[in-house]
Length: 59
Image 1 (cartoon, rainbow, N blue to C red):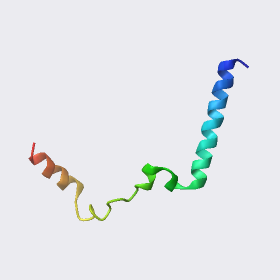
Image 2 (image 1 turned 90 degrees about the horizontal axis):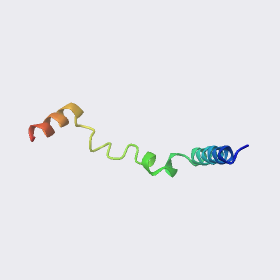
Image 3 (image 1 turned 30 degrees about the vertical axis):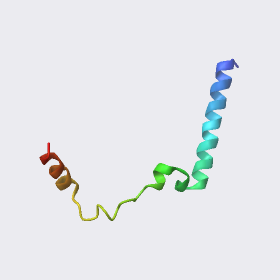
Image 4 (image 1 turned 180 degrees about the vertical axis):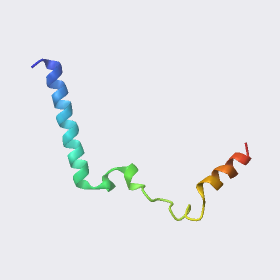
């Protein structure tokens, strides 16, 4: 195999290994996924369309 293909195969294997490790550790390992649901209570009584309309009134 050429050197480029060897490097590509190594990268694919490394990415698969990292993805498996991340999946095994749960969503808390990913800081973005850990934010899921944050601020839910703040937006509970706010309709998205009404909010956007109110923002656009100030333009």
